[in-house]
Image 1: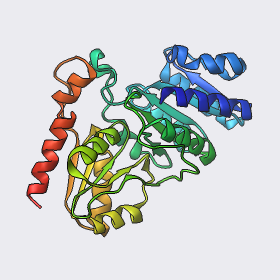
Image 2 (image 1 turned 120 degrees about the vertical axis):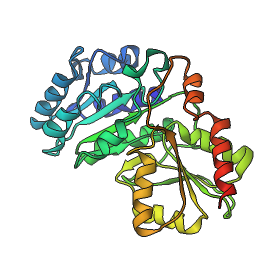
Image 3 (image 1 turned 45 degrees about the vertical axis):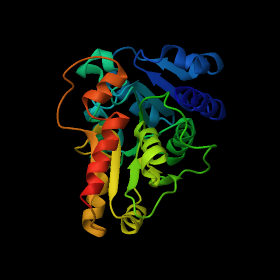
Length: 305
């Protein structure tokens, strides 16, 4: 997925000389392509994330199209005030890319883990929030972010979980839900984003025979589509590598509670920090987001329907 991001960035930069990549001394070989092909469109702002957002806002005001890259624990969490006031308030065309979201930086502890970024950015007016699940969604989200010509936050989670789509996506729309698997109508529909789409697919294919939907657009979210799925399903299960507070599960519950009341099981990170450091797989187990634990929770939920 990170390769798809790099390739899309180079393509956009070659097509539009106004496209700039600004990084806070992160990315390294990820940006070899843009440094090689578009060296004048690459800026290393150093470890000064708030200043980096201010630079991007100023450049956007003069006609440039900045893409601002950092770790999700820093972009957007550390720089939320600057995103809100410098960029979103005036609807400037700046794309923020938060890499390593969730537990990707599992060995580095809470300072580098980001499970609150979608909640933070969902609450900022005029800011679109995207969360691709694989390389195909990443490419489509990059094209969408560029086309929107407004402020965008794109969440980049675990990048090596494999494809969830069989081919590239054409003309992804903001708010769109993507069905990646059809399933039994008497099973809860699984709605997932980012890394957890792969988990949802594995459970649906090997155990549950449920429909699976990928939601690369967290905000906006097509409320009519969510309600239609809710009415056609006995219940909904929402999966995310993010806090259960304020993320995708909360967004779905907000919609259904108003327009299509139904049972919603929200599977994500509970309201706590990680207790230990370890591998990515270890952190998923600690937080009950490994496949076996998720499957068990869904089975228990189905038993109550």
